Image (cartoon, rainbow, N blue to C red; front, side):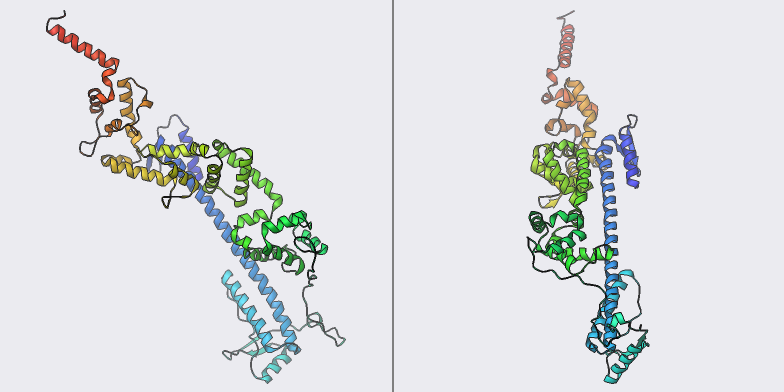
Length: 498
């Protein structure tokens, strides 16, 4: 991804001691801006790209599943339609029953066509007319000719080749007897059994074959009860249906699995869980590895949260089950950290970065606003992000120092502007620069000037420091030397000293 390449370049530049600024898309960034603005922005862009790719893949997979399910339904309904035609030809079913099977097939085919973007020519319409027309249709169906039928709504005549029914299809064995047509050998229906799921041993054996990942759960005891408690009775009914009615075949093809998943989606469990959560829950053998990978990822990225083993295991399981990544992972981990270790969450590297970004413009980020940004929860009724807090801080700074708006718009923070003022003040007053805090002590912020007078020059700033007693210059050794020098000069001028 392009953003990934740009991120690497930006990080390399930040770590290069010879680099003093960095240009990206025509804009020049200071090292502070590179660290606090551009690199986080690129990381967010990469996360968004990955999320978009995942969403596109999910949409594609869902569409393909729908197509496979539609194809399977069309195939099934064609078999039913053909059996009904044969039964109609023998006089075993009514015209209404045949019409219903034709209509069901037409609707299923229309659904498939809409999914694939294709058009299928209409098939034979249901016979509907005089008794003579119906009888003629039966004669043609028996002979395997092209059946001519009349549609009831329009009277349009259409034809379609019909395959002569085989003995297996009609149930005609040559001995004069007939058996109901069948294409799939149905399994025996479930009978009352034992255990939490009320199953027989035979059904449990079939379930272990269809769902080997849950073999240990179908034990007629505690494991079975845990399965019922976790998935709910409606999912249990679908699972049992798979074993007793051939509802989903052997769950080997995409169509069979898709049909099973579609039914699960309609359950209470399916409505409260995401596709990622369902995939995790139905793959218990893979869970340990997925959790391990997320645990390592969380440990590397959020070690400063100092989660203990039990806490890390819990959040890693949630992250693996919900397939968190990027911002979703950060929000999930911080939501957990605020509940488990709020102090370390407030003192984490990301928390400090957000506070410092606001402070650079004189904006104090509250604990509540910080928590909202880290956990993706509302603050004062609105969602906030690291970027929105920075923008808010910049707007606040421009409102207070409108004469500095151009510099702020160019990405220069008030902290950047104050840097030289602080250096001059520290050297002049003989104090540690860290003692000079323009955010919490308003007298230092006077270096920024005002809308009327503009930004102070360094000479004006030095004069102010030396002349304004609030800064304490009069107590410095340099001030004492200057006073002594002035006194000595005056004494000499008046003859008190040679």
